[in-house]
Length: 69
Image (tube, rainbow, N blue to C red; front, side, top):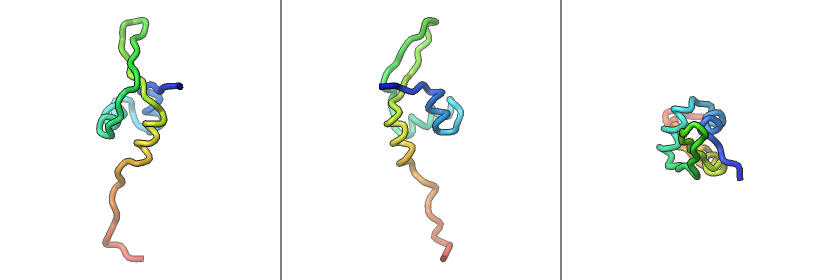
């Protein structure tokens, strides 16, 4: 299974990586794995299916009840 970095998640959502971290946190999406690179920096990796599912079921902006067809 291929996991997404926060940059890939941000690209999918169309937002900046810093915003993506907060968005995933609000949606309750946890990192599937954490890896440390050669420089000792930790990176969170996310399950793409979980990110896509959370994005598809995110809350909407609401319905305009004052408009009539």
